[in-house]
Length: 285
Image 1 (cartoon, rainbow, N blue to C red):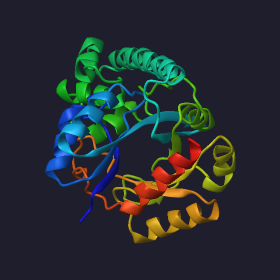
Image 2: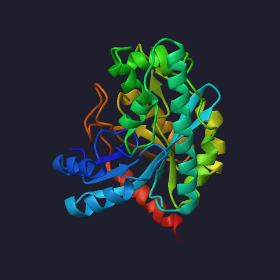
Image 3: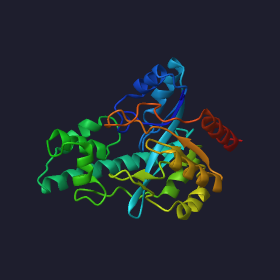
Image 4: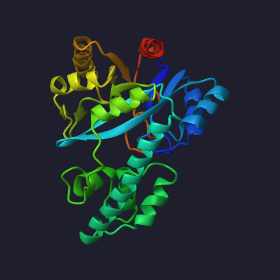
């Protein structure tokens, strides 16, 4: 039975559950360890930690920082961070402010294209969380311009789509360094993904990217992830061994996406948590 999920989102970014609801669900599903890894935000961590104490679930304080490289995005997970670190909070606030401006510009572009959505509605959907493209997609769906989240991204707001707007520039190496300065452990999230036809694609050259990221403090790869079959897991584990990286994993749980696995729906061995914790404890010496 799986007892671990190291990639979870809450209403502090684009998840459907509050931090307390997420931890309560983890307890109901008999999970022992989860990590709260909201996009560019640690606002949900304190509440999740408190809920973890009440429900008997270990909560690892985390974050997922969205970064860009030419032609694609790179997400960097941070584990065991000091979620109140002033430098981390300041940088995340800057990134979140940039998200608001980005959402406003996307709304303007959509209006120009004849698919108007209210910017105020995008903010309402985001609530207290960091504004992101899923909130724009929801607004498009509500307005009747699309019939699914997938169509919203494919037709309007996906990379290379007409209403796409670039984020504030932040590199994967900068994200790794920021996480390390906040006392955390950086891990490269979902290093491969599936296109609309189900084919596996690597959005970036791992062998070209990893040396720089390791130099900036990267300590692991997300090896266990929705849709990753045994061949993909074996490939990523081989990469991790080659670069002496730890392996982590999780569902990337949001609670709002069609066909996504439930919390804990991707098997992650408990030894991944033990090794991650040992690396963090070693870092603190």
